[in-house]
Length: 149
Ligand code: ATP
Image 1 (cartoon, rainbow, N blue to C red):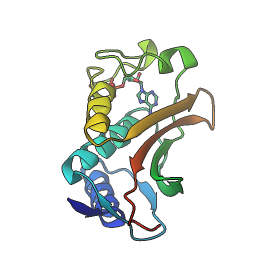
Image 2: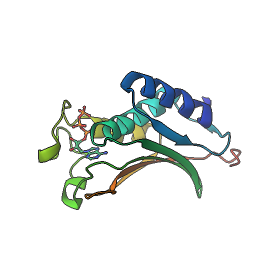
Image 3: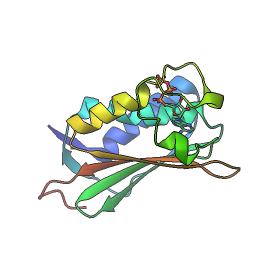
Image 4: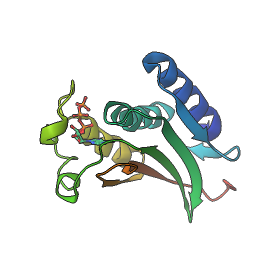
């Protein structure tokens, strides 16, 4: 189905902000039409925003930019971050970093991998521990030939 990304992001962010009373700064420079699965993409965004909410206290940022033949959607937080060692394991089902165990079950990111696979998207996670650092989750969605950006 054809989806307009900036509209999808605005709606998703607005419902997230309302549900959790947390501020999300969204920057999506222009309209972009993609062929993708709207529900799956929303779910994927929600998983990353939900983690950003759980593991940080300040504003969450969502940025969109072009990355070659992909569009990169980045969800950034300035929270507790993860070590490189943990970063290798967090996509495993039920894995939670020892000191950051919260209400969850360690399932979000393994579900994110499945959703990304279904969307033919790649996901990347980068993270650093320490004050002013945090985590960035990137969704790389393939652009179709005719989607100019
Ligand atoms: P849920 O089952 O509700 O998703 P969860 O958040 O524990 O629970 P995942 O989303 O799979 O599960 O994340 C796995 C682990 O990775 C988390 O427990 C947390 O330790 C770490 N993690 C994920 N995202 C972040 C983040 N943005 N900042 C810091 N740690 C994170």
